[in-house]
Amino acid sequence: MGSQKVAWGTAPGRGVIAAATLGSGMILLDGSVVNVALPRLGRDLGASLAQLQWITNGYLLSLAGLILIGGSLGDRFGRRRVFVVGTVWFALASLLCGLAPNAEVLIAARVLQGVGGALLTPGSLAMIQGAFVPEDRARAIGAWSGLGGVASAAGPLVGGLLIDHVSWRWIFLVNLPLAVVTVLLAQRWVPETRDPRAVGRFDVPGAVLASLALAGVTYALIEWGSTEAAWAGVVGAVAVVAFLAREHRTAEPMVPLGLFGDRTFSAANAMTFLVYAALGAVLFFLVIQLQTVSGYGALQAGLATLPITVCMLFLAARGGALGARIGPRIPMTVGPLVMAGGSLLLLGAGEDLNYWTQVLPGLVVFGLGLSLMVAPLTATVLAAAPDDSAGVASGINNAVARAGTLLAVAALPMAVGLTGDQYADPVAFDAAYGEAVVVCAVLLALGGVVSWLTIPRQPGRM
Image (cartoon, rainbow, N blue to C red; front, side, top):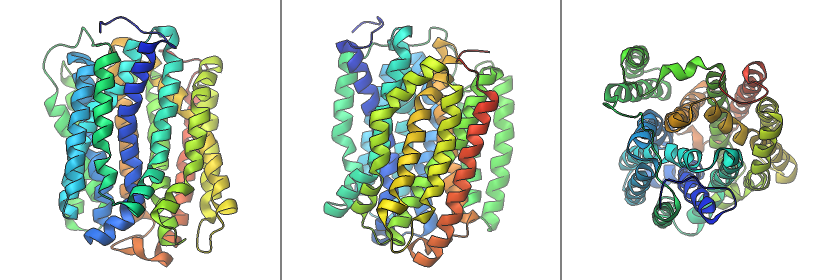
């Protein structure tokens, strides 16, 4: 297929959305499905709380650290090409996860999964931005956001079914057939797009420093209190400074700091960090709370989160259309505030649980806020960057989102007093859960305040 633009409602347009959604949905599904499996993984592999955090964070670490390179590779060599390579890589790493004999091998395989995700994730959105005619991009992004959100929210449900009725290993092995379909769709329908200005050398030192910074800070948070953690924190802090200096001075930076000269781009990414930190932490704590304290099985815990899936399925695209009509400020302000309210309603989840009064209302409210916010946020980030930098802009925003989740999952258990194998202790986990949910609600409220103060009424470069 050539490099011509595609339109909404056409077969090529549907094919582009299907390929991008299935690919990114595979990443989102994997990111959420693992949370449901954590208690079972802990028992089957004899894993500690720190190892369970690394099973989640090893993936997020390599994904966040390398996703910017993934966006740059797509801009230079073709977004479809790099997307396909990332899909295949992710599938092979998923196979290794499914065969892992112990926690250490699983953590290593999850790191490899993140590398594939770093190639795949920015390409999914950049393909839509580059393939669709400008007047149809907001609608296409809304559909992509909604369907991708369904994949993320459906993760606990799918995971619960596989864990209870087959094996936790199949939460990884299911990615193989999904990857095959994704590659076939991309090769058939997605036009190749790239940035004609993307020439020169890759910023390998920048990628190494970014990964080292995230790794150091994450290790320091998870292993807090040890001498090794203190040294890791120092290394992470030094790497952050060195990364910024490198990106400022090099002629071909991995992260063009000039993009942050646009106030809208900077503000939208700051809001992304806060909101996705809270989102990742809420899901991390809730599914463990339901299993450890409320006595739910994996399938029950997965089914419990279904209201978020329903909200995203029916409302996310409408949220995108609303943002395109009235501007992004109101959806990006109200959405996180509604999510904060939903989080506080989840404080009632505990022992002797009544799902209909203590969980369902909170998840519905949370899902409504998420549906309102996601598409306008994504569209705002891309509208604030030049079209030919879509891959880099998408990569930055995805890296910020993953870094937010990574650091929240690393920091919150320690901050609320969870250590060792206390994730299996109902009394200890119940007390920590309440504190964590309040922290997440505060982060979401801050995200709404940031949007109101900094996001313009209409998207665009400022």
